[in-house]
Amino acid sequence: VSRQTLPIRAQLSDETVDDGFVLDDVPHLTNFLPDLPSYPNPIQKSQAYAIVKQTFVRPEDAVAQKIVVHKDSPRGVHFRRAGPREKVYFKSEEVRACIVTCGGLCPGINTVIREIVCGLNYMYGVDDVLGIQGGYRGFYSKNTLPLTPKVVNDIHKRGGTFLRTSRGGHDTHKIVDNIQDRGINQVYIIGGDGTQRGAARIYEEVEKRGLQVAVAGIPKTIDNDIAVIDKSFGFDTAVEEAQRAINAAHVEVESVENGIGIVKLMGRYSGFIALFATLASRDVDCCLIPESPFYLEGKGGLFEFIEERLKENRHIVVVVAEGAGQGYVAQSMHGIDEKDASGNRLLLDVGLWLTQNIKDHFTKERKMEINMKYIDPTYMIRAVPSNASDNIYCTLLAQSAVHGAMAGYTGFTVGPVNSRHAYIPISHVTETQNTVKLTDRMWARLLASTNQPSFLNCDEAIGGKVCKDTIDLINNMKITSI
Ligand code: ATP
Ligand code: MG
Image (tube, rainbow, N blue to C red; front, top):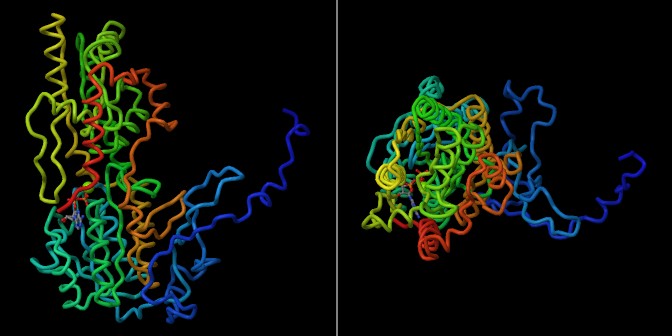
């Protein structure tokens, strides 16, 4: 196309001017009078920001949730941009902060803890930071641990959480009583969807009691299932680590006759880890995720596909997310109603189920000699320290949370939206869940890369009921209560 034939669209920006700008407001400890908060931000004097050209983010600066818009579409929701504000709400010497970690493990938690402590101390001169140990129940049942830059100096090199974690035990009143008794005025809460719902309860109770306490959530979910934000920390590390398990499975099955490798990866309701690990690895022949029901027998089913690939390559690697095919698995097992301490439904082990079914089918029905290898690397993946990109990401999250709380914002979750860090009202991230959309291009890219069956005729193949059960199960899981 020659340059001259390109249409000139210089007027486009005029056509799309502000027709529906909605700023999704993050609560503030004041009623947000223009002059408040009133203290000058001490980072002006800190070494770190001494030569930064534009130190402060203007309070009215916003980040658009939807970045690709048609010229006629409304602009939609915007969130406050994260970052240091010119005026802060708290005097440094009056801050008493605390940090708590809840839910499952995820690479990078320790980096977030470290950077909150160091960020508060180095940028804002805050030296009173308490570690709440063992999750939410630690507020009322355990001693606290004073956190200084020295104490947390090396923790990012370790996996797990330095503060320990737990499920269940969220008693809003007892927690807020404790916050009040200890004179805490900044609460940093690191955890997944359940934890963020708990953080919202704490924020509501704090507000009800009229306490001047900033509540900041830092979303942690290895599955990448938190809505609105681009990606959760630890996800990259998990995908990278999953490669090692996939590679091991591939090496094993490539070395034997009719080798069938099954790798179970994390992903209770969202198959992002399985999807991205498959796309990254190229050693995977088939990827099964919770969002896409599948079936074993008959035309277009998994058995048929495995047999084809064995004929072609003499080996196959299948990746299965832990939440895949739950309705289907439940059909052949009893009871799906066990729950953990936080009220999350316990899943049936799809990996073992799949391995057994494939083995039975090929050895008993097809009378074929096969070599099954089943790998479940879940705990090995969760336990590693975060990789370089997650470490940087965790640092940004922690510093953004600190800037937000110091400026007096509360009831917010911090995270990147279209690669700009933003303050998002907690309710926004807990209302919905981020799942792989089968109608989006990413899933199509995976199907194109593996050339696996799409199982689109699942309804006919195994009866609409099982597929519907799977979908219902996934939907029900979203509403966990304690
Ligand atoms: P992950 O699922 O990634 O492991 P999570 O934060 O979702 O992390 P959960 O065990 O579900 O992990 O919840 C963590 C904490 O949040 C628990 O202490 C639990 O009591 C509390 N919690 C969960 N759901 C709610 C809720 N709806 N209201 C109040 N507290 C909740
Ligand atoms: Mg959860």
